[in-house]
Length: 316
Length: 285
Image 1 (tube, one colour):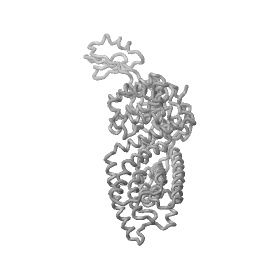
Image 2 (cartoon, chains in turn yellow, purple):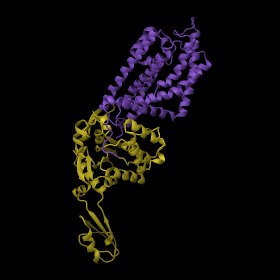
Image 3 (tube, rainbow over the protein chains, first blue to last red):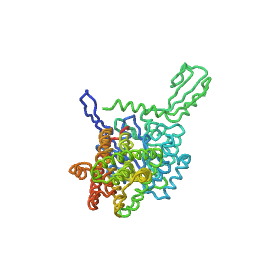
Image 4 (tube, one colour):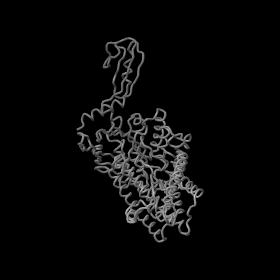
């Protein structure tokens, strides 16, 4: 069953461009330009794209913050802007660069206030909060005003705040932006746990592709407001011909070896393979002075960078 | 987490008690927010008290200079009560208020306000009621006690004055909130609201009766201000009610004007909010 359905979703903004000292010209910018998207219940969807591609704008239209300029969108059966307050009970939202917590109040007070705002039964609230406290190690800073929390602590608080009312869909707009490695790991582990339970649909925008690799099976790439890829990460690799690489370091240089690329004055051989590397490794037995073998998985960042570049070149 | 179903809203006829609880919880948060800034509260109460002395001496000098000893129809005792209660009410109604909403619009943080199942105006109003409650305890009481200690004040003589004053003060809080909400909402269109904010601060001070009692003005101008603008309802009306400046019927009429203006301005807030949401641009991505 679909929880998110978008058909021809568009958002246009009018910007004024300075032409001379007195003259300003109106220009219409299409931030989102006909996005079609269907997300099923329990899916974990990565929604990526370069800066200004329209990711955050799409999310804001899906959550009822922004009014679409055209097209249709339904989330949990609701039309987001006209039915925003009803939809708000069914979704959770984390904006990495904004806070939904009360700046002056301790984290615990924010959570308690959200219980009343979302009218969550006390038992449900307590059990969800208990779970988040345990998974996100909240106890050490629950009594500290939000303004005094570190970014990592605040983000853990934001995730909890977004989940306390038991949302069906969790929208995450760059939730790991600015976080250190440890905090990123904590956020990813928590989201993995949320996703694996299967009852929460997760839509994640990020620039950190490790988030996507770790969390999302499905990847939607948007550029210039249009979807340029919708499928699995493997499908993305297949589409852009990214292959595994077997890197062989040698003590003695060789001039050539089968279809390998020779590097480092003949002391390094690089093979590109589809699927298993066993056949290549088996052929290496006869090589003199074999020092090391490394198998490198295709780098998603390279693939996505190529995809962005291709999409930009193809853009109207 | 934990449950597949999100918390569903109860049916409309069962909605009143939970809605009241939600409002009360947000009000409590507004109270707690302001209670965290203790030094600012003390500094504010001290400043209002100091200015209370200055205003009292000026108005008493004005009254002493008249043949009847009355100024604008107020006796000297009434003027003292007018000034010191006004110095306290100034913080309760938050005549100058803050630019918090405008700042949230400018930075794009207003997006978070729209993601809650409570109308943004209800959210902001409930929090403002909490702020006003905190101000009653911490900003209203010190100047009023100071006035009682140092001057000969006018105390109400009719039993209904106190409840009418409480009602009028509640309406003043509502009116002032609505005006501040509208001024802040200009940020949806202009982004920078320093100009409208300065105009509001000067206008509300002069036309609300803070800088001088509006009864000092010529009667036609005073009546026009009272009927055609909401400003007198923010400060002058509750103070006139407290010092029993007019006959009971007129006092009731002035409070009725507050009710009318509160209704009009809150309706305007809802309409402006609806328009603003349709054209909203979240600044900063």
